[in-house]
Image (tube, rainbow, N blue to C red; front, side, top):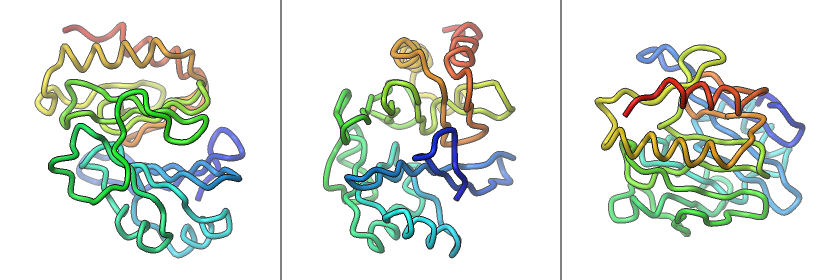
Amino acid sequence: MKQLHRPDLFGWSVFDPDRNIDFHSVVWVRDQGNVVIDPLPMSDHDRAHLKSLGGAEFIVVTNSDHTRDAAKLCAATGAELLGPAGEQDGFPLKCTRWLEDGDVIVEGLKAYALDGSKTPGELALILEGHTLITGDLIRAHEGGRLRLIPDAKLKDRKRAIGSVKRVAGMGPFDAVLTGDGWPVFRGGQKVLDELLASLTE
């Protein structure tokens, strides 16, 4: 796995040729148990690296399209699986906790439910007030610039934009770690504000 913008954050990626972008997973290393977010399939190297960092205590899936390899990693590590409460009735995995808007996942990591995206209650996570971690709604197909998923996939564009405004207002953020496409490791709030300025309802 690759170290991200701080020494307790790591990630690994898989290239998606259909969209011509990388998909990403994140690990937050904590003494009280590591948190893994939207885990993709892992190479032998990455599995060994995760084990050396203490494995996984919690796995958070931001939306049903990001279940990825969560079930396999959960079985291998015994981690607690957490998913969005908005999808509880039809979620493809059995979760031990369903995350509502504003829920504290662990100390320092909060979940916020987004409206209007392609799945109900998609989660965005805020880590210690300075790092925004996104699932599908906010992404980046080119370095240094964020965008929304295509309009055709949005359930409600106006509500989706409102969700982005709300989350952006919880900053300022140093970094935006996108589930899909380029992460923003510095100046995250500026790039978020540029996204908002480009959006029309």
